[in-house]
Image 1 (cartoon, rainbow, N blue to C red):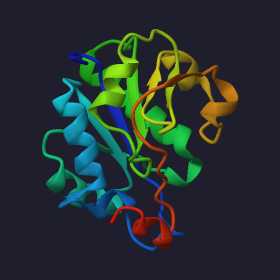
Image 2: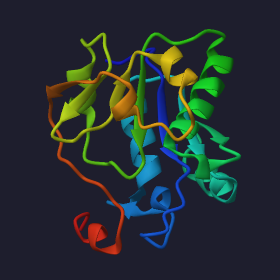
Image 3: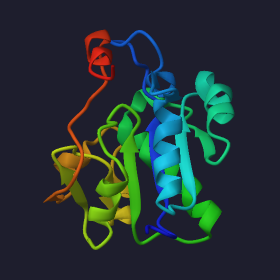
Image 4: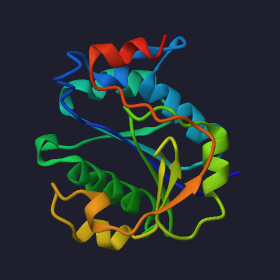
Length: 180
């Protein structure tokens, strides 16, 4: 499996359009964040970092005891800023810069174990299609040099491969209907 490949789950967004924290949305009797942690864990990813905002830290820690939960002190700076917080925490935990890291926003939940397996043989930034996530990130140092509000899609070359999963993006109350 993905033994030894770390994973970062991004869960620091404000969720203003949804009106509730995306990370804590329930789907099949588990929160979106605990689902992501569980799948990464079952695939052998280690360590698993969840980046969140301060007001969600305790709730996420309680639902994801298997993961390291870190707080982005300025989540409004953007998703890349949250990823950088996660990468720095990961580097501190590992004592080195990882060669490859799985990255997934908590609201992009259409992937599964088979999606991870399809990415394992890749050695460049790779995104599965049609789900779009998780991203297998290989340009860690480049991401650390980006501005906090830069879009990874605009700054990195990302190879697309066909892999199991479906495109899902939980942003609005209507999107929650798709989880039922």
